[in-house]
Length: 191
Image 1 (cartoon, helix red, strand yellow):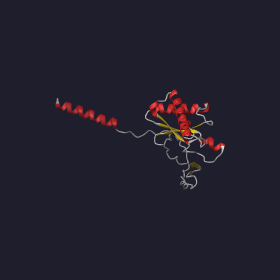
Image 2: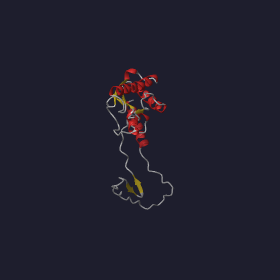
Image 3: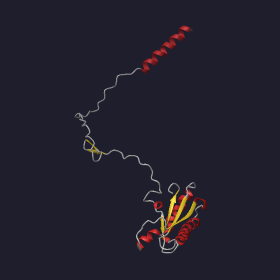
Image 4: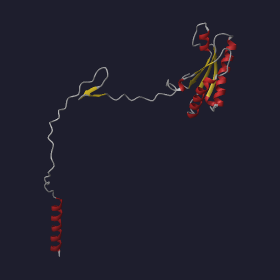
């Protein structure tokens, strides 16, 4: 019985080995196209002005460097980069043209609960120092109040008056005075 088992196992091994052996490929009758050898041209050196290379008539430009995301508060194309509200003479009334900007800043504060804002009320130099401090405070408070009505959290916003102490323009004319009658919106780290 042992001899029979050995013979069977040997036979199976031979069949297994024979079945796995590779056979020579059958010659096919497919036509083969004759081609001229391809010549690879070395790439031209980088152009100093563009950094691009020319390879076989194709211009290859390097990938632009990875850019870091610009803060929406500093992106000039974003409404959040607008930070000043201008007033008429002796007024703290916020014009309707500033409502979209204030809505955007309110949304930003709501989306970023850890953000803090300082509103600085400013005046031109006309009027007494005491009057200008009070007017600047009314202007800053008006912005804070409107942002609160739009949904901003009171704890995120502080309103202060600088009066006439930080003018943008120091000439003595109406155009210059108009630049100084404003409230500026500053975020934490900017003041």
